[in-house]
Structure formats: structure tokens, C-alpha cells
Length: 147
Ligand code: FES
Image (tube, rainbow, N blue to C red; front, top):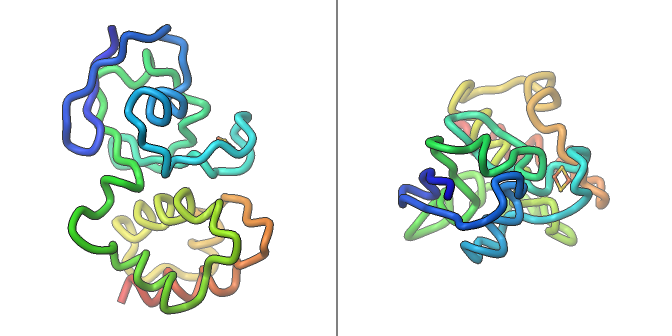
């Protein structure tokens, strides 16, 4: 049985320890804001925060997450939208929206490290794929959210 903390709550999963975190979050915890896009670490739709770093949850087993602190999009804000989410809505960033939770998680980690990121810093931190091509708008929204 693996134990760790998800969105400030202790969690135990009775699953195969090699289960990717993505599926434990979605299937056992019903945290479906973490999306499955590729399952191979390419798209970033499954991005969560683990111990302060943006991590693709399809590449981390629950055994590897033992004792660590995980935050999903559901845990990013409780009562109202996170400033990044507000900036994304104000800036009309989402089109289809599928990639947005993962991008918001990556942006949240970036803004904790740099509140006024440059385009290069954003490009380096946001390696998520957006098939709608919303990159210019999401860069603007991340800058607004940091101010
Ligand atoms: Fe994890 Fe695509 S589902 S990177």
C-alpha cells in the first residue's frame, strides 16, 4: 500500500505499486482534472505538482511518489479560481480546453519560482502541447497572473 499526500489530504492506494500516478489520481481518487493525453510523457496533459515541481504524472509510479506531496488542478484553489485560471479566462486562452489543467499546473510552479517570467522562461517551463495553438495568449495570461 502506498501512502502520500494529495491536495493536503493523506491518501493510501491499494494498487499495483507500478501504477502511474495519473491513473491512481483519476481512477482511485476521481481527480479527473488531470488528463490523459499520450501516456508517454510528451503532451503534459497529466501535469501535477509534486514537492514543488511540475511533473508529468503518467511517468511517475505511485511507488515513486511514496511520502511525497502531490497537488492536482483540483487542489490548486479551493473556494475560487486561482489567479492563473482567472487570467486564462480573461485572456480567452482555452479553445478546446483539454490541455489547460496541465498548463495551469506548470504555470503555477513557474510563477512560484519567478513572478515576472520572460518569454524564454515561459517557453522553457511550459513544454505542454496545445493542439489549438494558444501559446501567444497563454504566455500573455501567465505574465498577467504574475503581476
Ligand atoms: Fe502524460 Fe501526455 S499523458 S505527458
